[in-house]
Image (tube, rainbow, N blue to C red; front, side, top):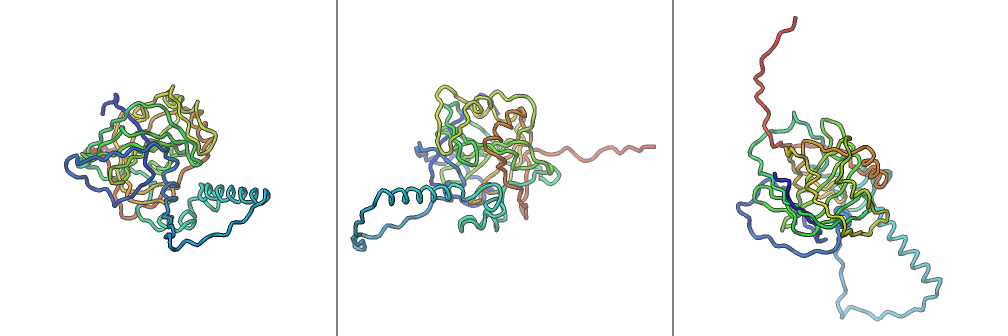
Length: 329
């Protein structure tokens, strides 16, 4: 993989999740790019908020008698609206009665969070993963764009315009956004890493593919510093910084060996059919950098989920196990 790649993202709020992405169509097909300038606030939350609103036909509309409202009535209305908005914003969280254990019971559309059998994240174990050379190749084409950053109430998220993408085999997925979790959501050999980044992509049919990058404590990450200096404190307001242009390819490990499995969103509504690619090798960030993000976001990792009948694949083959045996005296 070349590291002189590019990367953008932005996305349309209408997302339809398809079935499991276990194969790819031959050829490139037709890519229908749709302009979407509105920021992606939160992938899981936005999917949960999409509801059909029915408008009555003109013949069924009845005249409504106008009532005069006093100033005190208007204050009550505003307070009620603010209360409803607040309750909607905190309809799920990472702890307490709205935490991951109860996501499937908070709203009907979240039921799969409790009943699904292809949920994410999972524990990645080399011994259980099946090595195969038949996995599609991974090509990453990201470009440098001005920073668009938002605190969506659950994570720090960087939004991207169209033009940056990955290819799995010959299948193209546009980069929508990337965001952070502290600690990591995926585990390796039973242990969580201090941080994880998710790069969320979508194809022309609405299918999702997510790249996961694990972070371990080590040297200061210079590419992360630009984001940390511009962390948004206000929830829900996107900030744009023309003076800072980042290429997220700099957050990918040099060794691109990866795990692959079919999973779900890690936030409500936990929709399944998400193609997951998690890199085997972590990258580094300093303890202070990781702490800065955690101080703003809090602990925002969903616990690992059962694998059930799924198979975890890995993009590399293990060496032969025919090893010489030694005797010790």
